Image 1 (cartoon, chains in turn purple, green):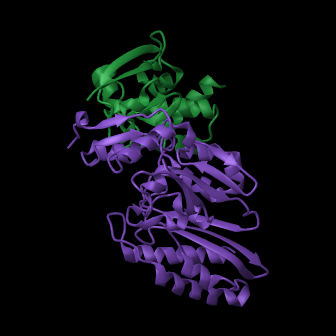
Image 2 (cartoon, chains in turn green, purple):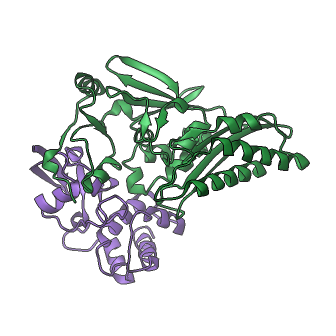
Image 3 (cartoon, helix red, strand yellow):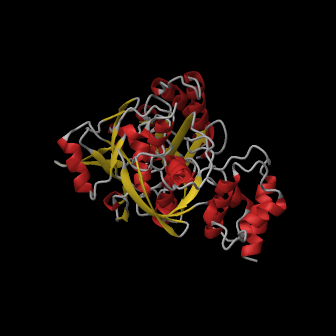
Length: 289
Length: 156
């Protein structure tokens, strides 16, 4: 059943400050909308509960890619296409480019934003595993100022985040010192293209000799939210992946991952399938090292 | 509630007074009577409603009218000029890239966008460029051939 659009209110504040002032005045009344690739789908099928919206799609203050020595800072309003067109991101953060490239079609990549992908807070979102593996931080902004935190602390549960009703996600900052890391990402969906993932894993590791000196794992659909797999990382730290040691390391990795894999059952897959495939992806990564 | 929206559609200035959350697709079809843009899924999956918004390919079913305010739009009606088919349209016609026709306007716009970026696209680039446009008739091979012929015609 189509929504009656005349019952919905949408305005376009002229600046980020103006948008934040509106959110601060009546916290919770307004829902921000950027590229519309999520909320407009809900509208189309008559399921958009929020009736007062403010557009942040045109706000230039939120659409930037700024490269500094230590990190690349990406505005929340940056589209997937912007990410795919950035030479700096292509060189330093290949897993982010890969995940942006398999987020929907070209037309949706032209509209959908990195901030929307994060704030929509789907456990199956495409870019969070790469951002988690890279150890990204997020900066939230309100009329009262900004706060910055590890992205791994942002998601609280299924579709729940730390974002307050008067706040917007401002930017995502990703360290760029991964030149000596092996990098891996794989999304398992119903098809190769245009599908929402059943499970996805992003992984980076730095080896010293045959030993894992550092490893970071980010996963989609492994739990009710995008997660960093800290227990598995801890279990793999200092383990050997050379020769006869590899099989024992894989066994330890699978056991550790099982302790933190708590997937949901939904229309796209089952918890059992997701946990099994996640372990297979982790093994694939370890065998590639 | 309604909001005045002004934009340039296929080169001509247009003003409409519509609810700001009205889908651009519906503004085009109902208010401007440009019915070449089709609705397929209404969820951004099928690409039948694709148009160029400020030169970028978008699904018009996912664009609230207000976000098109001040923009430059190109729909399928704006692809041909002076009563002559655009080479992309001619090639779709000649190679059987169109059958029932519902997906065709979106296919043509997506091809237009693709060939702007890649004048001589590889098969992989064609497949990715059109991956958001679903066709239930052709099996895609004739569409890919149409795009290849269009590329050869425009950028020999």
